[in-house]
Length: 457
Image (cartoon, rainbow, N blue to C red):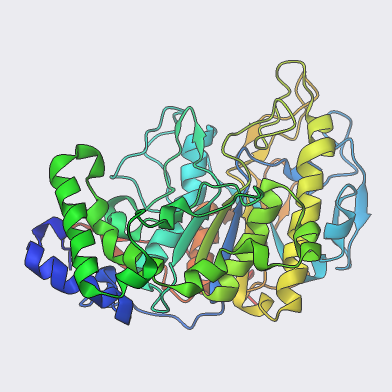
């Protein structure tokens, strides 16, 4: 069954539908009510996707090779963890204490060597048409995971299904895979680009016009007036096209105390905020916990908006350019930020009874070369790298697969990126073989991979 475009619905019908969202029937659900999904029993109610833009070095984090020769071996040592036999980088001592709660998948692999194509692959589970740094974000590419979840299993609790923050990813061009693409703008994430660490953190995406209060939205007449104004914008401004796919969902959120409360970081004790760290990424991880606690199904948290790697900011792209070196950046910035946030999030979810129902995925678009380059740094390496899964139906204290002695290629149990992401769908209760339709009404599977049973508890 193909999707019905909102521009095919008469205005009178749209106005009649407009009031329904406040009573639990969202427009995307109405438009797709005839579609059937082969549902699976869900082991996770929510997913927190901690996306590490730039590509972390697996050899300097979760797949160290202490016996490798100079030029390959990390400058850091290794540390034993709470899971016997699992060693990780010795700069992650707090993280070592939660390793009995995680699965390390040490053999993720694909063949995309440029950031935007590889990131699109990681964000959607589908290979891009070409491995080109200039890969453009188009409506023909596949949607983000959270958009697929919103299409097939949307929330009916008044909360958004899919939320992403606090950045828009780009490496020159905007990175594809961050929105709903051909599924339609109604399945885009609620994108929040305000800094959760800012004292003035607010949600302009949910702000009301100056002359309209939440109380006035109780009146259907006011809702209709607002819809009329939006439709007029559509007719008058090309920049406003597509807004009619958002309006019903946004109106419901504006009237929802649950949404406002979920985003209210000021409600957290100062001690909890300090545990996560007073950084943009730290407070974003805390916000992710608040959202899944409230009932949001899929949350993308972006480590950085850029690949970074040249100063103590940005992402994990540690080539060692501009006379900088990978190891100072790792020591001063990337590893400490990871060390504060990842174990804190896992522990916090456990303390609140949310861990079993929440799947955490920590990964980037690729790893880094086993051999150090002339800058004593590492280059792109998609042939073998590590992803971390925790909670939500993943095994605990487990390593899946093994890389070779240098961390260059899978030695046992290789996991294609498609299979890893099919596993995520399986754990959240969506059959990875489910089909959606593109704008030409062609049936397309949401995943071309197979769930990895060895990862699942």
